[in-house]
Length: 292
Length: 292
Image (tube, rainbow over all chains, first blue to last red):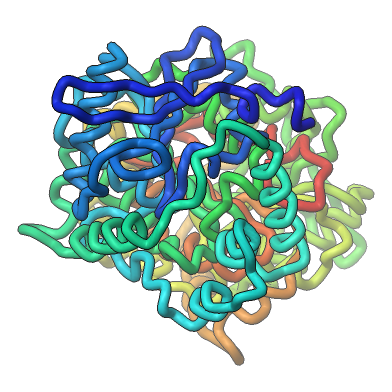
């Protein structure tokens, strides 16, 4: 597959902005849908998007994959708040002339998506939030938990193989899906972002701690969001437990929840075919309702 | 629509069994799918299935609508346990020669479906559970709660109009959907089951109280079920809160959760087009996984 996937060969592009920033991104795909902006997980770069998923999504719309400030080959300091990251995304979208799009935010990316929808509601039409949490959510990315720390501290988990352990359930089917995911990530051979270092991890971890804080009435800001939203979670997500997705759909007035069995944080990669089908059906709808 | 809907004109059939029982049912629809058995809610009869939903589902498979013992025009005493109701369904299926089918259980019907899948696993291929609860679930059908009692005790809510108040959210969109649902139920003019009386309500209410009891380790029996299952719930279900659907997918090893916004107990009727599409996609899958 490697030589034929659009996702694995799409060149990395760079946007220089007046303020002095430089953002790395990739754009590929086509179709009648609005562009879909993809916002990545903790320490993830452009190279961490599963090409099987992005290829499937790119069949119906242009995708825009984005490295936030200080991540991958984007310049600048990594913000220590989700709000700071959201500002960079809005600056980037303005710079590339995108004033209306859909957004898929995974994990940290889903928090950024929520912040942007609150701050810049007119830019976004439909929102997909995968494996993420509302502000004031529970048990967000505590990597010192035994279930996660065991794998993160195991030196035999080299490179992406740690993702197989922490993004997927430990069942045979979960681990097989994880191994396939890691193989697919390796399909891209050139023009790579490289691995994020500790300065990225530390700043992003600070943003999780800030995001856990409640200001005012818990979840009240979610009740103001009218955007049709699809919330997706693996039932056994150890990194950002599914209770956070429950709170999202209980408080967002216009959100559908789709939860997958035998799946952890990487549910969208584990079930990339089904997820791409459901996401495309959701994004293809022009209804005011999230129900598709 | 009324004169053209299959669901509103399908004749009621009767099965007499050796043990002396008589069951009312309707069969209609066709397609390549396995027959789909539909099990109804508290005090509901054959006439309480939304014809818009059953017509849509009947496009791909034969449907079997069933009145349990003592309900509608089925003879006998209404069992006071879910297990007793499940026995009647299995007796009925044997009597009509159905030894393999899919099942959609709504509310009380979803409890019966769970019991049958545990007792007679080989009969059932795929399972859809809507607005229901596991054994040992929380806050199951406590009709004395203010939000429900207000409407149930209001004499101005005549006939099915009470369903508009208790199956749907009180938002304008929820109530509009509820009014349309009640109109659709009225499309069937002849060969009606009639309204269930207090003897049905009392026995079925006893079955809810028994179902709330935990025997042994809570939810342990769910972990033995391998059937692909689709769990569906309105986010704001006041009759059987969505927390019960959370517990179902957290414990059933092979279940997808789909939750709808701005919807209560009657989410499958409120979003009948989307629900029928999702249910058909789920039922059309031949995968071992519930993910569709």
